[in-house]
Length: 156
Image 1 (tube, rainbow, N blue to C red):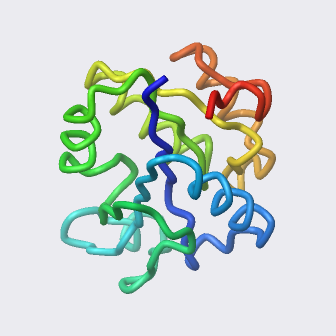
Image 2 (spheres, rainbow, N blue to C red):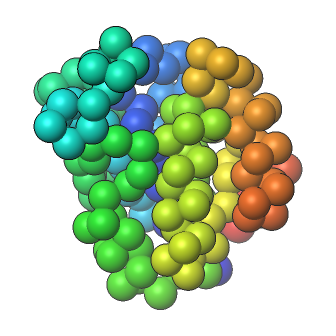
């Protein structure tokens, strides 16, 4: 199976648990990997004005990946989507930070681009609304259907 791991916003601004970073890093060693990093640019996405919060201007991915894409806002940048589409993949494995916001936004973007987004829920955490990520996994299942049950479904 031709697949890639897409890692959403595992960066200092979101204070990911060390175990999550370690586990995603291990998986990224065995698959082609792409990571997104959310950077703040108020002229592009009004996080500070509307939410009173902003990600760091210089955050870097805490997970080494083959490709890193900088994004502003919830969804992946067009360059990341174009790159994924150019790979002719069977599926895009998605994990990372904020299952119910940024991870879900990646799922919608990939789905709309004709890709097969597949959630890796044990390597995904939710926002402060639901840190467990269960809400995001339920929404993902409802909209895209593809949620892995465990590591044996990775097909590495």
